Amino acid sequence: MPRALWLLIIGMAVNVTGSSFLWPLNTIYIHDHLGKSLSIAGVVLMLNSAASVIGNLYGGSLFDKIGGYKSIILGISITLSALIGLTLWHGWPAYIIFQIIIGFGTGIIFPSMYAMAGSVWKEGGRKAFNAIYVAQNLGVAIGAALGGIVADYSFEYIFLANTIMYVIFMLIAVFGYKGISSESAKHENNHKAALTETGRKNLYAILILCIGYLLCWVAYVQWQTTIAAYTQEINISLTQYSLLWSINGAIIVLGQPLLNGFLKYMAATLKIQILIGIGIFTVAFLIAGNADAFSGFLVAMIILTIGEMFIWPAVPTIAFDLAPKGREGFYQGIVNSTATGGRMIGPILGGLLVDLYSMSALFYVLVGLFIIAALTTISYDRILRTKKEMEQKTFLV
Image (tube, rainbow, N blue to C red):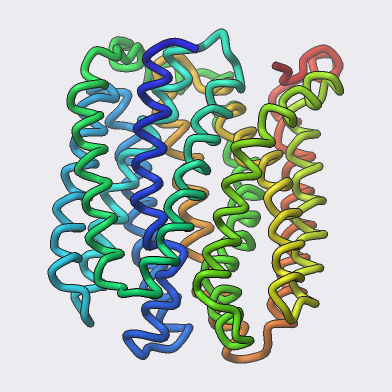
């Protein structure tokens, strides 16, 4: 891998480690420490995610105009300012305000990180995106493990730890990313390329694919919101809950290379890869829906992790393949904003279903969402090619 990609991997790991001190525990903090309902907690997370959606789209377009370095520095600066504020004032309603600012700042960062990864190692194909994905989950494993331990001692230190990690991320970005060139910023005709017939078809295709991607995220985020709160009700400790996310990250870091070899051996297209992942997701949620002890959630988390290893890296790879020259940032912004949109809708939808009905009703709805996601994945690329082209062209490594 190129040196520039290694710098992006390290930065992503540090970034997500800091974030993972807090995000798995957000609902628990709002519900248990601030005394708000699950629905209110869902609204707070929805506002955070709505700000991230705006940040994703803005950050992706910004990458195409000024390059990744300046975009990432801007995003880090906004986020770090809010984290300092959150460390000092984390009561109600200051918590809401800072969460919105954090959402916008982090939203700017992620499209640029993915677009830069694809640009610095184009010949790597999906491997560049797999590497960034593994780095994210290494951060999840470390941050969630430490976050649960720190939270059991005091939530005050969670906010401080998050801030310190972002200071480190800022230093890595300032001294490491300036020399990474961004081809996208050099193309003057990128908007014209997007307006061609091929460009329009590619845009429609990624939007259709992202419908299913969004629904998968609506379901996935329940593990951080409604399922997180439910585990507390059945006396699963914060340390055990955080351990689930540590296992999630560890499996991805250790298992992604094995999965890459398996997919290459099977010559699986990215579409098939996503469909397999959706099927695995369905099994994981069926198990979680019937779990009443830590062991059941542990099994469900292991299966869930295998499913996300199929889906999450595949969608950004398809987006990079479909993006017209000079629009890589914009397409990564669409993908990241879709994922964030799922994280926005998921908490409020899950909170309302549980508050008005039950956890069982929530799981039935989620299975229905997976069926819709499978249908959109099957059909997303039909607009791209004629019948002859569809027989000849597949998304391979």
